[in-house]
Image (cartoon, rainbow, N blue to C red; front, side, top):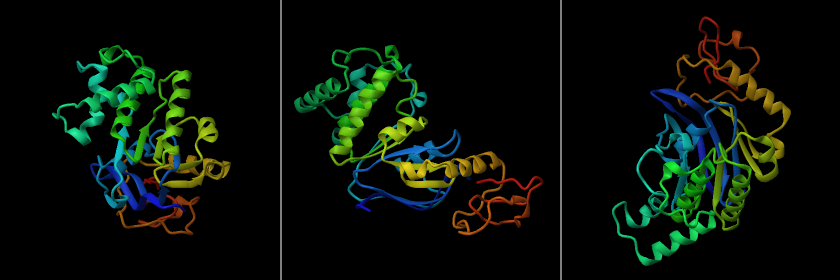
Length: 279
């Protein structure tokens, strides 16, 4: 593969000691465009937070190649839109890596803000309050902020959620322009048809890695079936296996009731009352 931008080595991520992503291995190439897919609760947002450095690994490693800067766009539902701020204030946050949060903006900064606002179709919105924006307008403003960051690795968590079709089309143009510039983009998505049409590579999660590679190969029926198996078998309250307990390569995944007390297969089993999978 091309030079890696990002590498996962037995990566386990979670909250309060409970893992949400287990034993993830793989590489993401520089300049690639990758969709991150999976059912609700499969660990997609957790993975993005781990890459962004918001979550520290419970085990293993998530390594961004040295010298590569990261821009992270969370889900809109995680943002407090009641905060009394204008669009220009939100977009200007993209300058903090260069100027700091309290740094004064220079003339070139103001010119750059004008360019990104025009690029996302928000010229004239600078003084609008963010709580007056539609979902599509808010996402355009977040993309403008990311453009100001000028990062090499861009993480988008559900960028098309609650966004109109025209905005989806416009944002896809921006995403592809980033990739054409040599940037690396990972985007959490639910629409498999959109993924197949626009994203050459896919990372498929079901608390563990189902597939990583060319989209046409990853989104096959067998992987869909396997993902459903792991997701439906997940036991939220099962004890967490150790971060270094990697799954056995050839262990059967279809016979959880036969699993010993701490066996590993494609999922991880513990002999509880119902022999439930916990990830």
